[in-house]
Image (cartoon, rainbow, N blue to C red; front, side, top):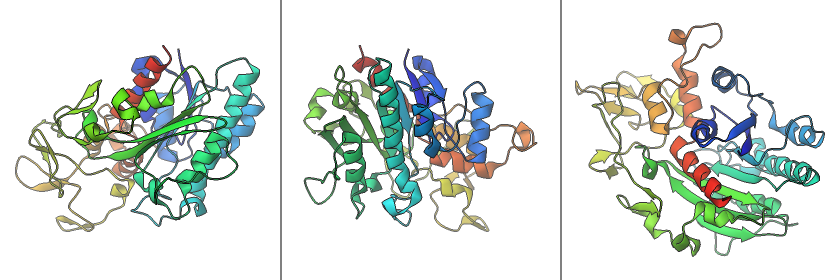
Amino acid sequence: MLTYGSICSGIEAASVAWECLGFKPLWFSEIEPFPCAVLAHHWPDIPNNGDMTTLADRILNREIPAPDILVGGTPCQAFSVAGLRQSLNDDRGNLTLEMVRILNAIDTIRRQDGKQPAILVWENVPGVLSTKDNALGCFLGAIAGEDIPIQPAGKKWTGAGFVSGQKRDIAWRTLDAQFFGVPQRRRRIFLVASAREDISVAKILFEPESVCWNIKKSTKKQTDITGTLTTRPGRRLDASRDTYILDKGGMTVSGKKIYPPLLASMATKQWIGNQEAFSGDYFINSSDKNPRRLTPLECERLQGFPDNYTRIPYRNKSVNECPDTPRYKAIGNSMAVPVMRWIGKRIMLAGN
């Protein structure tokens, strides 16, 4: 049974994805009030260690255990093209380097205990590939054990790659949630790294034809994303299961529209009459043809969560009074559950 520790845990897409695989969470690390409440509601027996910047020292002091897997998606706002893109000048961006400190601490303890090094699973936005300060190269260099940042072969990093360093091997790949069974166009970078010599991190993220960086296959709709996973038709989303999704880009799967990426900012967008002030991306046509905003339930389904997963008792209010605003934010900040489940299955196969 594989164990894991989660940083920047949010509402724990990894735990929802990996529970059916038999993975065991040892601890979480989250500071935002509403996600913390979601974790306490669904995972009451798993300690939430709060601020991730305290974890490395606590692991080295053996206050908290060193798991087989370290998983997390550090805040994306520092790298997102939708934000200010301050990258490593943003404290949130520097949490990627703090994650390396935690990984190093875990491996130190595991080495002392005669265990295999840990596996790192990291998720972030594609914008990290093109920051002016080479944020990804700094992150890769730190993980690999190099003294200086790693430089891309071209002008910027590509959406898939592999680095073999002094300390660890690293593979990364851009995956889109729409090819994993949810009707949401959500492209994210997924990175897997480890010092283990008995597994190949490249084989976790790539099929044999893709190890040669031929990922053309994964960019085609209605074809295999890998040799083990095929696309599935987009699901209908509203409570009666008869609503289609609107998308300004017009991307479709099996004739159904694919929704644009969910964002945490859905929680704070303003309304002007029947129109949403920023864009029409977050509207769908209901059966009476009147446009309306997506509900939190529909957003949960877009990310692959169980229905009403974020509908919890909160701040002395009952489940029925749970506010929508923090639900939108938490769901938009989370990962797509089916993608994380696929990566978990690949990790299981790599260890056998």
